[in-house]
Image 1 (cartoon, each protein chain N blue to C red):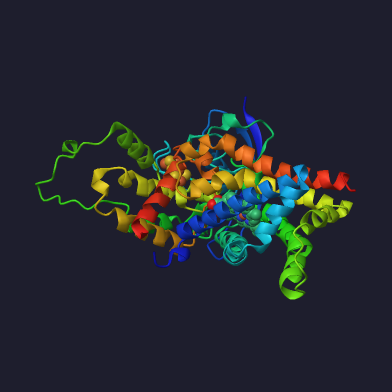
Image 2: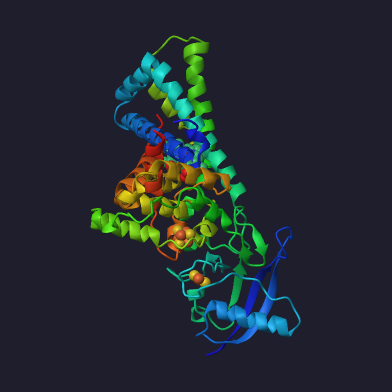
Length: 248
Length: 219
Ligand code: HEM
Ligand code: SF4
Ligand code: FES
């Protein structure tokens, strides 16, 4: 059955604008629509009425790029678990519901416009060590010649599934980026290829994380619950151990 | 090790280290107080030792004071920095993904701080006055009587009970959090669940029982 919804959406005209919640109503929303399709329909309605469409981020719309964001009814990526906003469906809501839609909020993620925020702080952290240096001149060693335990390979793979969406920061009451950075440090800390640059990697990435103005983890565990990829808190503890090793 | 306290992870580990120290101190304090229920003599003897032994007085006591001050100052610093890093939502559903105790460490901590101030006025200042300022003669059997006397007042006893309830809330998150901060994996920390509950609830409840015991056993 189609639904009628009340929407309260954050509108902000640029980084320096104050911004405020604006009310919209939308009728005949199909439960089979994705959340972003619902916003597409709303935007068409706004354009037809001569208004300025709501800016929101998206790209792949299949849960792999990490571009879609949104804080929906007080939760990053809305009420469902293990998904991004593009994978959220309107069947999670009921006819007559009021839905709050806000941008991911953190000082380090300034609003660009409406629901679009600047997450390039994550890129700058990655530039400080979220990579390994290999000589690709042609004599590259076959990765399969390096013995790696199944356990380490699995954990590294799990850490590497982080899509850099920023839901962990958006959810955290401290706006801490430690789940993201923990995952990016761990994916290499677990593998032999990551050892050479391990100490510099963790030191530089943590320094950049601090310089960007992210907060400090207090182990509430909210990030792990809201992360679309189920990145474990273990990665934060591992980053702490790596940081310790690098500094003694 | 340079500049560890200037990094977020360094501060987190330092916070956990001070918390471990406080948790060890609390356990030790609890064991001594517990003897007051069973034997006035044992309590007097232990208190006399703690109160006059130079190693305790001049080595442990300054470390303890430093530990407490460090912990709450660092707690405030972290809270302020985290407030600065974050932006308020119009609608936020914190209960969907985290416990109330974990989100409100600063408030349970502030309640404990208020208690510590009261505790200093009640026990510590008179002690220091007795020993080092007024230079009163040492009477190894005075401690039990002083303790019982303090729990005469229902208001003070009530304040003690309330403060220990807040301590339980603080430790319900803090105990496990300190292990996770020091780098223990979440899976191992999860195995601490039972120990954590025993410590976080058992010790404060024990202190409450001791306070109530003396309150209702006034001679
Ligand atoms: C003087 C008053 C106190 C204040 C203002 C205070 C404040 C705080 C704050 C804000 C935190 C959160 C920081 C974080 O999670 O990283 C914290 C953590 C903690 N506190 Fe306290 N606290 C006080 C006293 C105590 C006492 C007396 C104990 C134990 C006997 C204690 C044990 C802990 C533990 C175990 C943690 C977790 C440490 C961690 O996560 O690494 N606190 N405290
Ligand atoms: S850790 Fe999870 S929530 Fe954080 S950026 Fe990576 S995928 Fe997103
Ligand atoms: S749009 Fe790519 S993950 Fe949602």
